[in-house]
Length: 230
Image 1 (cartoon, rainbow, N blue to C red):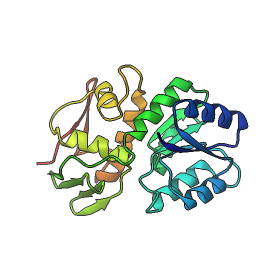
Image 2: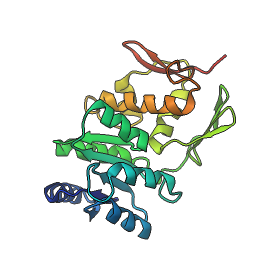
Image 3: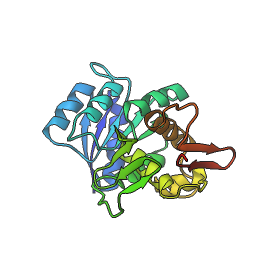
Image 4: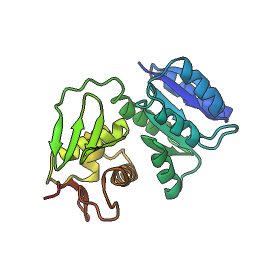
């Protein structure tokens, strides 16, 4: 299946997450602080990182930022698994480059679903074409986005969400639809805040004024749409 790195300074969390992931066929490597995690990743990139935030020596946020700055690691999916569960904590995690965020205490079945959804992006072949719309260019082969000629770095999940919306410009998509079609969650299992946080993060990256978005618009009580500027 997948090679997964789990990083946490809590031995109980390491044990229960390792056993759960191994039961689902994954190979699991453990690290007990951020520096150990980076040393392991320097030896070879893995398929997914599950990362605590509050750790000695190097926080999970710093590890996440380092991964996103490192070319051979930058596209690796990152899931924060942490006791910091407030909205502002999640925003900080997504701004650092996380793909998903699960607060402790957590349900093991939900963890497995989140891992399965994130692994859809690992090594996926680009079977769709370059999309150019409204001064934006999205290249599935490289995962790169350009807005008015300016390169914008997005994570694999952010790219998938943006491409899904942009390729259906002018259509409104509910949060539930996006959780199913972009993340691959079964109906009723994904968290609406996951979509909301990624939309906020994408607006910070692609919009000239994130408070007054031109591309990614909210349709109250219905969802989101991509509307290219006139």
